[in-house]
Length: 199
Image (tube, rainbow, N blue to C red; front, side):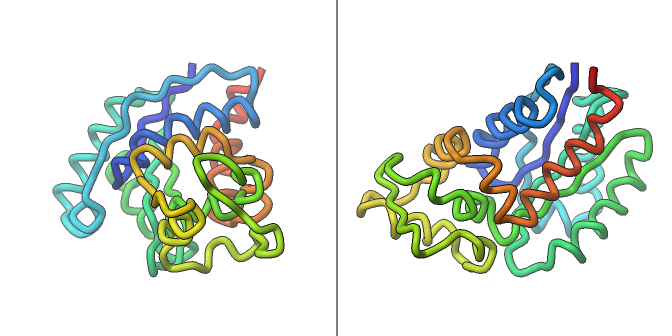
């Protein structure tokens, strides 16, 4: 049994990430069994900039995942460079919980960029329409990925708390992997952590 204790910033991610982790587990490590406690929600700025908040949430995640589990910190990169900011956050986290496995993934720029990366697979779902000529290879460029999704949802708008888990359950993971570097980071960290658990 693999336990993943996650730290997220949004209500949508709190609902969507367990769905995503179960799908990634089934896809990449089909013989593994997974336990995902309810994600720990944080305010990103306070979490990253207040050391007591950072420490408190990481220690809580460490208690949730146990000795052999994984702490996954998933945040939106926004205007930060994931390749620069991610390792910095990871180093800080490892100093606090050196006895735990930790992964830090910054969705570039938002979690919804992973939907853009797999947009063709979401066509026709929840009023979402996608023109294949638009392509998915520049998924991580739009600053407002939520707005990008909303503009293609037939006027009904994009609701993070309901649409995020629904699209997570639907999107093609291989397509997201191909078109999004930050999603590949999540998958590669998953495989790196789980290699000893494979049967």
